[in-house]
Length: 382
Ligand code: GLA
Image 1 (tube, rainbow, N blue to C red):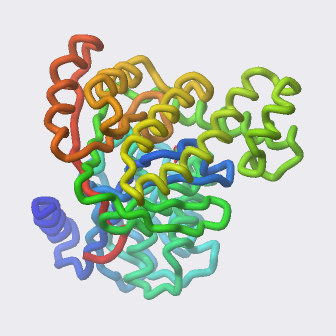
Image 2: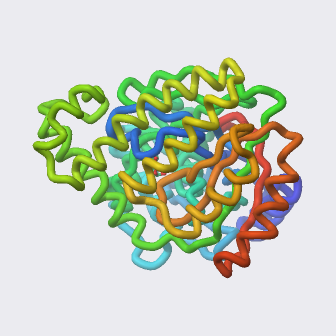
């Protein structure tokens, strides 16, 4: 982090010939449990992590947003008083353009700003680097233009940018936890009301994220397909979202559904229950229960929602073999590659790391990356 701050300051000075006035950060996230439940108005249990997008910024005297990405070594510029269009080649710029467009549409009075973005959230790993960028930008405008905007609204702007401007129909989880995370806590989020409950992560537990380094393919199209299938199931049950269907109601009418739609719905309905149970178990430090719920969540993502890939299943098996019911392991995030999350007593972290190290590469030909994380606060000025 210290290095990131140093280098972003230098880059800002070099690009804009003056010193920034503000540094803003927004974290990535890891989801402990509750996958693909957010857009079904259900429950999720993520925490913000100590990998962040950071922004150095200062107000200009005009209507220009001047951007530089330190990670991509690319610049972009647009005028707040003109139409903000999709950038055909620089995808990173679209997350920013999308958020700014949304803020303008909502009537917020924005000022021209010089911005350098940088960060260390692994990209394409399912740890929400794009949501962190969106939230960092919302937070930057809130701070520099003194906007009367809540953290929920910043998150919603990020989600809208992604849905409408970028074209991925994601839910609210990633942006909300990036905007509202709490140090040492996971948040149980009700994605219908956006109400959050802080769940302390017991001091003796560690969060380990293992990146399969399997390139995520077809993510947006498969994601949007899953979402449509869930909506189709909700229509069948005559409810607003699958959150409103109980397991009993589902079992009674399961035979009426197309088998694939039934599998998708079963995942979401059972995952909502598991997520609420996991929040309780975490609060009470019932690690065996957490272990069981995370295992069931993974099986459900693998067999019913069909969003895991071979490499991820291998990782989960290696780790599960090692930890038994002393901790939990499951894939985290949207799926089709990415990371697994492990919640274990700190004294067995090294055992997990060496088990993965000695088996993953030989079984898959890929090398893992491992991040031992802490639950951190959501976005804000540094
Ligand atoms: C992605 C989306 C989230 C959520 C997860 C799956 O991260 O951005 O909204 O749907 O996938 O739980």
